[in-house]
Length: 180
Image 1 (cartoon, rainbow, N blue to C red):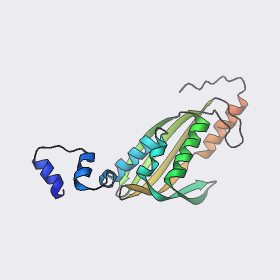
Image 2 (image 1 turned 90 degrees about the vertical axis):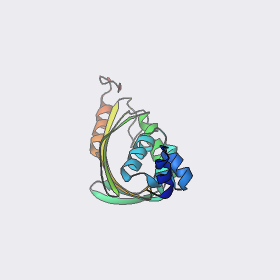
Image 3 (image 1 turned 120 degrees about the vertical axis):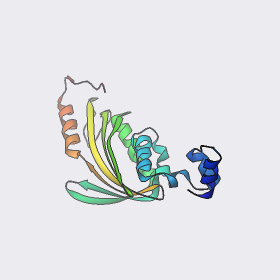
Image 4 (image 1 turned 180 degrees about the vertical axis):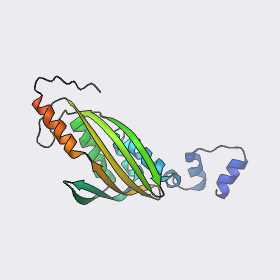
């Protein structure tokens, strides 16, 4: 607790993070725990609610370690291209549902697992849209420094998504509905 926080506390004033930031001059995100930074990022940006807020949670350059056909690939992402990435999800799967099913923290690293459910409404990987449901199960470990995500390792059940999209494309009589 710094001097300003102590004075506010002793004075009986319960300060919000924004009020403390105004008094101390520290950015609000810099004081958030890594777990809270990742929770907010997932809830606001990855969920598709407000992808334009990605710069609030991501460092200017983020190392994104991804598995693709069992080969690790590392991309350098920035907040703008991450927001575009989320908007691509929205274009392909509509306003999808996003549920964090696990969130664990250890120091500067935070593990998250989620389920994303949408409707295939635009072409994806060369497959015409079926209008049918597609569910993604994924997990990532995020590393946070100074209130920003600086690196992550992600695993997505790409084969599961591919199988769903292909099966949906063959389901021409649409016996499955896209009610989520």
